[in-house]
Image (cartoon, rainbow over all chains, first blue to last red; front, side):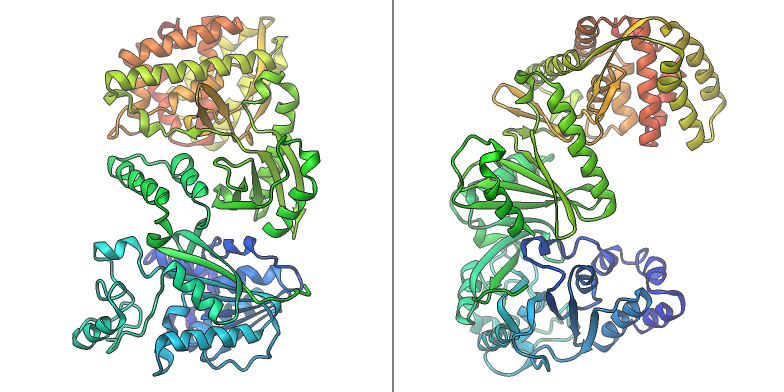
Length: 306
Length: 328
């Protein structure tokens, strides 16, 4: 990352990504430079007067995509090198309405009631690692703090995994790097982490206790309501929240059926087989239980000035 | 942005002439489209099919594409007789919201097919029967569509320039032309003289007439995605595109499928010939003209997609191939 920043300063951020990142790691390149990463913003009433806070901004992809559409974007990133990359990109692009801040996302020196939209893309599940209290209580407190930063009628957008996503049942790894921990009761997952020597693929070190909490469709709703939010809408986001190509409202089984029957066409035998079972799950109302990722929108009550 | 669009639809509900009650809620399925565009499938209350589809241009490229599509759709909608209008989306309105261009069209009931669903070499007896019926319906729709939009013209030098010489020039600009292509273009340019002073029907070409843009609902065929529509174009182009975008088998690459469809004798070639003859007969086109149209189609497609150049090569340098022999 330091090398990339050094070259970005010398050659330009775009050239460095194209030369050094795209050939070696096209997935990461798409994550950093993808143009569709903020496509969910169409769901929100953003205007040229909106103020946006992007928490855990990473390489700044979402912040940079939203900056031309808003009055102000504040990108908060905890890792200095990533924030430095954002600042290099911002300077080179001459973007005036984007501020990059290096800060702990749980202790934000920002004015209350200031923002119209707060973005948590792949952040909420990690909040438990920022302290020693109960992770669920920490998430609730964190969301409550965000609620205070929002102006009346403001929105929070959350991109996050589903605790019971279908691939976990087939051995898909959790944030801990372990299999099935998200499906276990939290206490058992905690014990399992204690005795496991597996490093987390995200943090590159061993998580000695289970603190990376994801939730089900219903638990996210409850969590947001308990933190003061209302009008919670949850979408299945495909192929994942970092690549929001398709957004399906989970409250409407007819739309899910339409998607599976008329739009998502399966060419292979395995695809047809999975499609068949997916349609059955939709009919049984279980799709919301098993989809991989969610895009969630929740609102702070009140009239939005913008 | 979607909030504003929903408000707008409710405001304009009576003028949209959708002939159903004002909805109590609108639900949206958002899907990325090509070239940075987004599709919104808009459902009324708990309906099973979208009553409308919004196409939103998120960048300049998709904006230009959708502006063109809305224009084309309006043009084709206004040119069609009522019985054909229900087989294409109806343009509702266009608007710029929060800096994004969007247009709204009515949603069509029906399901798309994939070319992979009909791998010609491996279809069972039942699969062939179903596919034949489906293809006959599609060709019947195409004949109706082209009959409804046809304009009989007497071919002049300027038509030859526009439809034959210009594509050849464009091809030469894009590719380093091989000797056999050069010879072929020369022969084709000479053959084009046959068209002079002949009556040829010009039609509206959909220009992207492949299975992915064709919907089937019960017994009805419907066609979407009109961004490449060409007014007063050569006939037969859409039919050739429909056949040549089919797939012969899972392992066949593109030239392989094309060979199976056009250069080999098999169960499909009989069906293809019958349907081509039906089309040519309905529009009054003779085989000599059809052969020239076939090559023009291949040249056009080679300009659009480079691998089609191999198809062009595989047909005109194949000594035993003649389109008129295979179709008439």
